[in-house]
Picture: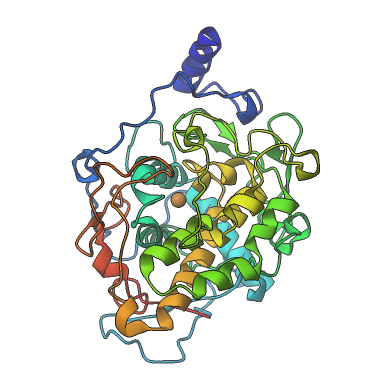
Length: 416
Ligand SMILES: [Cu+2]
């Protein structure tokens, strides 16, 4: 194993390793030191954000947004209401992927491909592309942004930064789409979002479970899986049974909860107040298992970890139902579907906030670092609206208080 790892490391440094050569399923991180826990994310010596000067030009080859006229299509997202914050010059109306026209789908996918082929902006170790940068952001912040009060605000800020990067760097003119997972719960494997032409490509197969078609096939990630930074493919391992965790009933029960602490626990991990809490095994969160689930789930055989029984939630359904890179809690943004999944989760938070804006625009709870159940919550600091969400130089940092109201600057987002 040590020898193998050295070989992999040398290959990774020299850029010799190909996605096919190192299937993610063979990569083990047990002897690679994971990120240090409970350090101050503001002291991580991350690059500072530089404001782009005007509308940035897309470096390199700009994807053809409208091949017939050569000009990008106009914004599809005409706001129906005036922005609630006058600093929002434009509102970004996030709509379901299934409501996109083929042209809109193509424009979005092209922008993601552009971002994947744009050199790293952060210069963080091992990152080679702007897409790698977003995986690094998630890797760096994973231990603050999950099982914590930061979960929803951090991902909301991350989505905004990604949306702005697609627009500023890759000439994308629309808003981030979301994946309406209620419609596909229990049948991810036949969902149209995995279309090979107007979608994200399908399931993985073969050694390494690499995706075989769609715009991201044959792409090499340089960051992940987990806390590793080893070139590998985007891989998926559909699990229709686990995808039933995305079913409407598991979201609806979260809507019934009336404070943020309870709500976020329900959305992230299916925790319900007064019920003994489960959590993913700590090894998963430490990045010590290369894939999740570690073995194929077959509840009829009593094997594996039954996510639906233990941790059914809108957040887990998307991650575990798609599996592979998406199933890895640390490096899941390596699959671009991550951003549509988290836009869905973010929409659920906003729907819940809208039920009682007076209280819920300031309701935060939980801690500012991960709290694994049933481990004791020793040494955790409560999350506050003043906490800084570090965007690792990809966009301006945000305070939690800055992202509580989606409609207001700097987010300027509405969901349809
Ligand atoms: Cu996350």
